[in-house]
Image 1 (cartoon, rainbow, N blue to C red):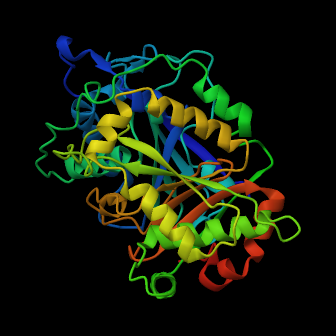
Image 2 (cartoon, one colour):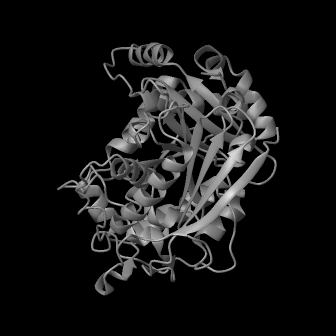
Image 3 (cartoon, rainbow, N blue to C red):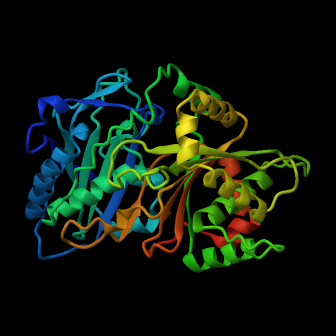
Length: 430
């Protein structure tokens, strides 16, 4: 479906106060360097309201964004090289558009190709030079019914999903007049994760699996209702004498993983499959890192299904064990050596042999993003990544929405899997 999008304005928003000279260079850590060369896209949909006119909304959003950029000043800069960001206050792109449709049309379909039309840029766009793209781009879409969608794209090199959530929530708080304590937004992680020369790392990922989304990749939204997840967790936790009960994310991940293994089986023989999981480190370090801090504060864990018969129970345990071992001691020892780079290179190689990646955005405060006209009725994303799943909370924060990208044939098998059919619904409306 093609939306009729009429662009109203396009401008550059700069920080309301100039960045001090001694803060002009922001150093990238090893974890920033290994972030994929994409934008992190976030789409926030808001119900129509009548007591704030669009002109007032527009002014409020732009003024508060300008103020927020004084805290997140690297977002208004440009990437200088693989080690630094020039915090030169060149600003963020800000676009306003009128959509000649009711918001209900988008929320009814919610296909990724439809959502991409609401973004300020292509999340997977490739640039000839690292310094070419803006780090932050925003598009505010006004629907004919009075609803709106605030769509944000942040370059992954400066923000993981947790940092992106902190940014939009802080922006909303500034717009609402809430006092901000944002001293911990800029946190220098280079002492924990010193930068390295990473020539060709992401080229290895692309070569091994076209990891950044070849055209034939199909991305679909699977919704796991909270009650179904509770049943799944109980079912997995009640096997044998084990008292282990998986988390929501572990249960859903194991169900998807089990379905992928079943779809990949050849002549009833299990084909081993690796699962790569992004693990947020902010609460795992001692002392914990600031929750608001920008940047990429995550590492990846790896789990292998093995060649024996699998079950959701055994796979959930493998996911749990791979995540559980990532603590302060492990991270400091692991990332202070060549081991982490070796794991990343192994991950690139495993992608070529059928690995699948999970990135959980659950429990991040996207649904707390209130600019003064209520919380979003729905939060989505729009990344077409191959053999990749992004997990988000449903609006009640009990269920999980899984955006899954697979080659067309593998997607068809996944949609026919008995476990997926039992616990998930495909792209339901709200």
